[in-house]
Image (cartoon, rainbow, N blue to C red):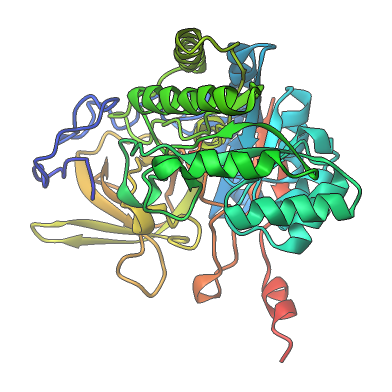
Length: 466
Ligand SMILES: *Cc1c(COP(=O)(O)O)cnc(C)c1O
């Protein structure tokens, strides 16, 4: 269900979620303008009208690295990581959610900026360790970690494993004990909060695969069992309420319920668990209609909520951790495409086909996600035209940007860019139609560097063993 409005008129009568000012039903005044809310920090248009990032013109990047390509602004990434770190201060931890986008370069940047890291598979763990991230700063997540993955994480010495089911409590305890270790764990609970977001990406209502419901005393029972097992050191409770959230009230309710559980645990077992994790899910601006909060506002709000709830429950305030993924990497990258065909459909809109599509950005097809788009290889004063940016895949749902305006003189060979594709685009990319997944090119201070190279047909054929 889309919460936005259609340029031709609102499709849904539903109330816009908080954080959305108004729906754009008209083109922006100046299609050449680049809204700093949706573009990476160093993105600008030079005197010739060409968009630059990190001081490099996109035309040069396209020539050197080809299209489609994800272009990531390293300075922006570091700024955002640091802003989160600074906002939460020394008494809290920021875990970057690696599933949003992970590569060894990114792990090193995070390490240098003092962030910790969430992983949720053996592959993500391997990437983090290969980049030299210290295992104590890694948290291991997932609703179905295999025994092999658990063993690897315990052996590596990860700082915490987030337990997601009764069976996993026993499984992790057994593996840790067999290895002669005591594993630090948090227990992931669902607090019955549904954040304001798309149905399929909300994760804290109870009818879902993640976490152990607080309802019916199940979470309390999980803690009871975990506390009895020698292989486990229970350090806290974890709650993640959803994705692309703008409204802090969901966190408020979640914190209230998590602290309520901590109080029950204290009353029953005489232990005050030292940590709570409130998850990630903080929203970013995909279009000019989105108004995300700054990390310092989020930190202040979350810290106040937890402190207040703990005071009311007469508990010492636990150490807080958060897990932003999208909010750090999302805005730092854009996808650079070359326009292939431009097909006007009378009375409807113009379909602009690019050289990528749902294989490099599945979010529009999967979640009805909203994106914006701009002509970046030149400026144009032509009249705006209503477009739909589509890919080259054999699927009519292969849409990258559902509704947007681009200059009416758009032509094959022009470069267009879709901002805010740093999160969940490369990490969810596929080889549909045997597409070659695009590279990630990071730029900084006038220099570009490939951090994930483009796939080749050789890569594809290597897996096809005949
Ligand atoms: C996906 C996920 C996150 C990160 O979510 P974002 O929307 O990228 O901030 C954090 N914690 C957990 C447990 C997750 O599953």
